[in-house]
Image 1 (cartoon, rainbow, N blue to C red):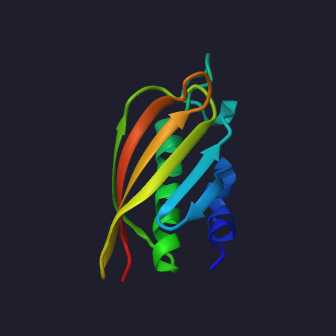
Image 2: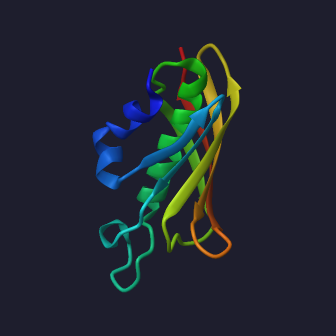
Length: 129
C-alpha cells in the first residue's frame, strides 16, 4: 500500500492540506501549512483545535498503517492542547502497541518556527483487526 498516496487522497485531509513527509517502521511525520481559513481567530492566524486534531489523527494513523499495511479506522483519540499553533504545524507519531484488534500511537504536534513550539500531545487508538 502506498501510504502517502492513501492518506493524501482522503478528501478531508486533502481539503486541510495534510502532507505526510516521512512514513515507515511505526513512525510517521506530517505537516499542515497554516492559512487564514484554518484559524479560529479573525485577528491573528492561530490553528483551530480541529486542524491540530486532524493532523495528529492522520499522522498517527499513517504510523500504524506502516506496520499493519491496511487501513486503520480511529476508535479513540485523546489530545492535550499545550499552546496555540501560530505557524505551520508539524506532527511526529510513533506506534506504542500493535495488537490483534487495536493499536495505539503517541503523537506530538509542533508549530514550526523559532524553537518549534510544542502545541499538542495526543494518544490515538485505532482498529487493526
